[in-house]
Length: 242
Image (tube, rainbow, N blue to C red; front, side):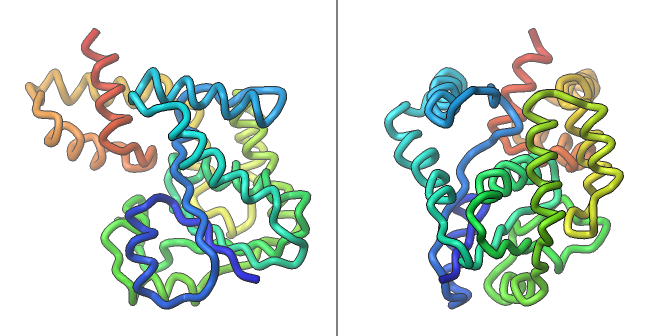
């Protein structure tokens, strides 16, 4: 059996055109923001649902059905299943990747990382955005299997992130294999995520930039490593203007 975990509906829509076989699970979470510490999966998803309702207005029941229940399928993966994790390099996607790996650790699945391998250094933070079927097929062809050490490391990255253990994040990142490209830069972004993005937005608004779309474009150019979407940037913008 083959499973593909895709980073959002936009990639999922284009993925359908590739004719790559396998069941699809769509990751619609944004774990880089909001509460992520809880004692049980039930409490975790309830906390996330309340946060998403408060911040973005999404109904809690809809969240459980479209987001939580979708990702909980990972816990039921059977041993030997081929699981392809399609995640980009930046912080937003990296955190979701680490979380998914942590859910798969005890399943016995054969886990592969599918990267936006067609991107170069200058456009690495753009990820799968704008890629059509042909480059997605190329990315899949270049996928890399995670070793048992990589899987443990991915789970450790998630645990360090959710606990806010910055020194541990740095230590783990320094020992990571090439299955986690740019992870040192990404972990530094994780450590600075509560201060640096707002500082960048404050710089932008001090230049007279107030149009939300233009502000988002300018922020992405300066801080692509965070991988924030327009909703996250607007949330930060509102904070910076308070």
